[in-house]
Amino acid sequence: MPVNAAAANLMGVLKMDTKNYAGAKADFQKALEFFPSFAGAKGNLDVCDKNLKGGTKAPAPKTPVKPKG
Image 1: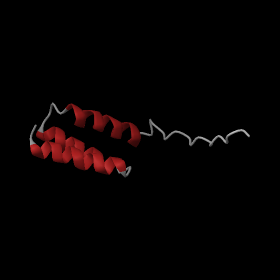
Image 2: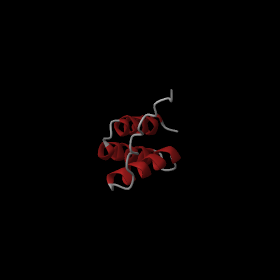
Image 3: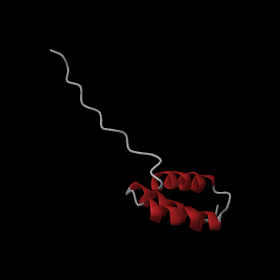
Image 4: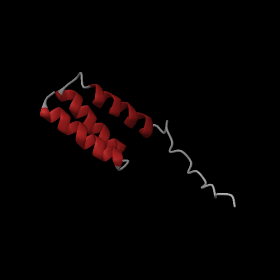
C-alpha cells in the first residue's frame, strides 16, 4: 500500500474521531484515489456517508444502576 494512501486514511480517521465527517470523507476519497482497492478506506467512507445522511445515531446513554442494599 502506498504511504500517501495510508496517510490520507489516517487523517480521515482522526477527523472522524472528532465527528468531522465531511472532512474525513474527503480524506478517504483521496486515499482511494491513491490506492483504489483500499478496503479500509472504503469502509470508513461508508461510515462517513451514513453519518452525513443521518443514518446512524449515537446510542442513548444508559442510566447507571445503583447496587441494592
